[in-house]
Length: 401
Image (cartoon, rainbow, N blue to C red):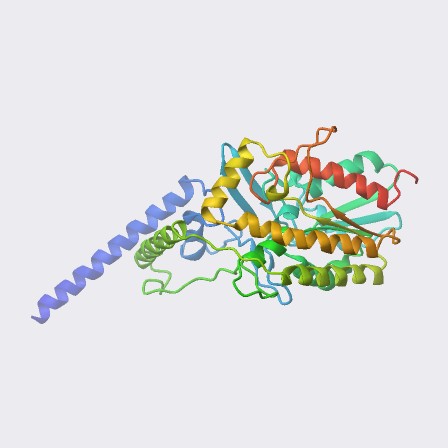
């Protein structure tokens, strides 16, 4: 009996060893022969980053786009990227640099903000959520902060030394931005800061049944343990782990697809936004920094709706009934906030408050094309950049210099 058990145990060990050897070479081949697809959650990259024992250096693997932060809900991750496929050949791939900012196409450009500020230098920073970050743009060069930089430098480079920083962070609202400004951005010695807000203040409020000003929907993902996830260096066990996680992902995905998401309206959201914006304005005045505050446009406030816009709106209405109705209720409150702040600062040439939520196509062929309800495509971002560039010229008196 003992001999029989020993034989079976020995056979099992040999079998597991053979499987481990096979997986070792197979996964090594898979790694070297197949390209790692882009994406926030692609399986191949996630697997090799977390489990594969062959590769100890993960520098070139997927890095999270958001990471924990001491003061903020989170911050952008260094040298990471956001990839999304919207279909019909429209994709977005926006990268961050080692400083945790979106760059303008040059990975080292933002390092200029760490250098000592020159006498003739003007530093301009863009603050906002995913629209400022660049979601919807095909690449970093087509985000509106990068395009504003191109426009201003092409017109005034011979007379001024401008540097531009995209400090947009996915999901940030006016509260997170005020903290971001106070704890980090003021140290960069900006001359002008532009804020594009509204969508996230409304969206975060819409998701809450009971309003909480500190609520934030985005979470930092952490490795979840299950019965197969330890020890991680055993390939066979991790193959089981992958299967288990995939089953859970399919179940969760199915539940999500069949779940109707409710939306809610909260009057408090406008009051909190007003307080956040006022605190930010006071901070700019205290530090002698000029500021432009925009109430962000979105598909719900667009006047000229085309066929692609209708499709986006119909899909959203199926998934989230009353989302548009409640969103516009928030925006009615936000418009009053911006109008109030505009009147309070009408005699201050250093603070500009603008409601651009009702952007329409103009005789100047500015087309604000949407790729989602909150994000433009490259053409839309170019139109936004042209409009913002004119505001920068005015507040900095560039044409008169």
